[in-house]
Image 1 (tube, rainbow, N blue to C red):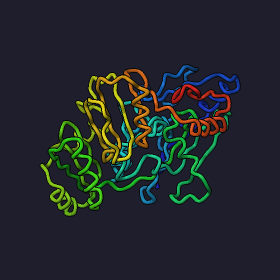
Image 2: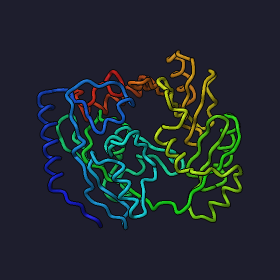
Image 3: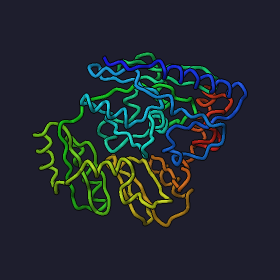
Image 4: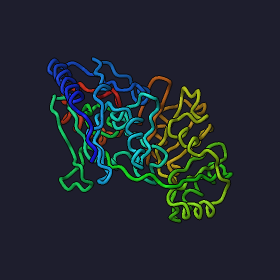
Length: 358
């Protein structure tokens, strides 16, 4: 086990908790700020700014037991660098979306990268989360062991809640060894062919670790031990992509040419077998075809949100400043409200960040 100095950072954490509690006691609304790299991923928030970026540092890292506990303001790039020194990584490949990205911001936005359908989502690698809720209570959910039989995994609610349920103070992740070898093949296919082909190869137990489509080209990454990876790449077919690490990083960080100068953009998370939207535009998709990005001339938001729901999925509309999420049906909205009231009864934490109602 590797321990890290904590005396200074512990006092910073305590000061942060007291500052939050003072605002809560006054029933003041709070806007949570970290590295500032993900402001566009939700609605605009108005409130007293609480900066958590100084609450940083690795608390405990045990490479042998495959877990790391880290404070929320820790730069995600720093954490990944430390893990890499020990031949380990975060298998969900968290998008940073900026150099100042923090662990807390990645967890709060529930961000997973290209490996999501093959290695699992961020929430699958959360073991424990420490938060302060909207009542000023410091709560810890989960444990440092993978098996949790205590009941519902409340800590997973924090992945994607965008700070509306609690301000994240600490996080414990499960980590895994880095794959020893990876390669990417490129095949010429249109969007419909690419979706069909991905469903076919998914059933063949290839060690696929990422896939995406853009501009009549399908990219498939396979990772693991070298010999099985090379056999899988040959069986899948196509040409070997040079500098594939750089390519997948552009997919993960949304710096790929598709995302450049995209002030208006739609994101869909859908069943893989869902058809393309009936409106024309430019497509980019990954996650085996389940995460799809689209930009075009259609501006009927209600119709597009409705189409996504009809396919059994969700949609998000991103403009240059904020993101609007698919409206929820009455039953789901009622559940969201009850969870929000349990964690933040006065509606003080990041109000309106996901939905206008709370």
